[in-house]
Image (cartoon, rainbow, N blue to C red; front, side, top):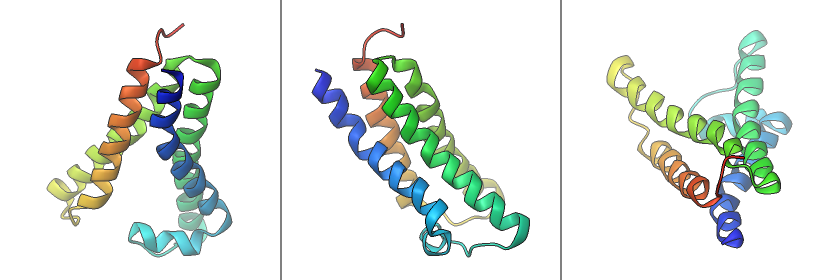
Length: 125
């Protein structure tokens, strides 16, 4: 069962770890993958810091959950992915943004994988 939890969290954790570090190391290369140009000044600072923190928080919380066997570390990860999917949907519905079906699908898949791991990881103690 322990290996199943590791497996469920491996894909989202590794992807988030890589994306977080890419935002720190090569933000100009990763920004277009998110559909925007890298800003300048304060905007650039916000893009890099906010997106790196999103991905690194998700990855580190998943790692902490596996190391400590405390599933409560997965709650922020579930919140990050599900709120991101909901925010993208609201942006489409309310703010005339393009419907980001691929990104929403990834966020939903990650939410489901982390939710399954949360359920199987056992108690919250």
